[in-house]
Amino acid sequence: MWRAGLKFAYPGKEFNGSQRQPGVRTVEGEIIRGLMKIEAIDGPVSARFRVASRTDRGVSALCNVVCFDTDFSKDRLLHALNAVCDDVYFHSLAEVPESFSPRRAKERWYRYHLDATGIDILRFTECAEMFIGKHDFKRFCKPEGRSTMKTVNDIRVAQAGELIVIDLFAREFLRNMVRRTVAAMEKVGRGDATIAQVRRALEGEDSSFGLADPKGLILMDIRYDLEFTRTVTEPLLRKSREMRREALLDLFFYDSLAPGHDDNE
Image 1 (tube, helix red, strand yellow):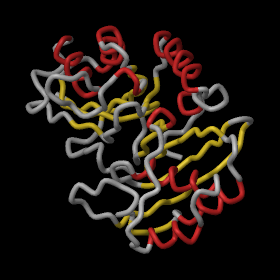
Image 2 (tube, rainbow, N blue to C red):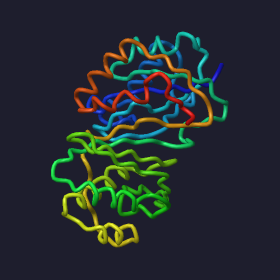
Image 3 (cartoon, rainbow, N blue to C red):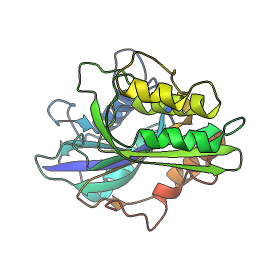
Image 4 (cartoon, rainbow, N blue to C red):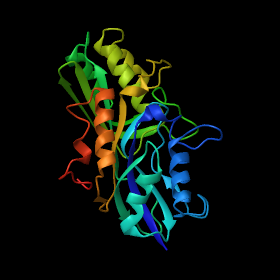
């Protein structure tokens, strides 16, 4: 018996979110179905099945992480899962310690793609920089009873043709935190809100700037102090090209799966 850690990708439009729910198709549900079909686990409880990050309906991932206990062959696991799972694509594997939990990551990286039409990139970037550092994000998330004090390590903004690309890095994000943060940036960039209004919201003033469309959001990577071995299969390559076209990500989508990317950088 060993504990497997797997990195996997999926298009958000194919699922009703990532977290398993009765009666609807979810990413976790599809993975559990695949694992049980190949007899890698008997069930999620006995296998201590855990997923690193929950994503909402419509949000895609290039790299989420799942771990579970199994006695399935390491050499065959990724191939077997890719053969039986629909719309979930496994590309990297690590044998992780017995105590490993994918929730306890070193850093998470999200990327949001936004139509640049009508946006003042200087105001947009100024607003983005306000969110870097430790803040109370209670006005920029769905709290769900958790502490809303979080630290954003970095936010990078770049314009590429008709798109604005926003990369956000933090050890963890609250539910809807990325989409609400980007929505505030967009309103400032379009002149529908001011930097001062966003600052007051970060200081606790009751206000909302809306929720950005989930289709623009991708979970790009989750990083740990351990190494994953990557195996990119032809089905994954084909699907990544389809997802690129659908999400208008031709310049950016494939970065984290390309040879030479360092999972521990």
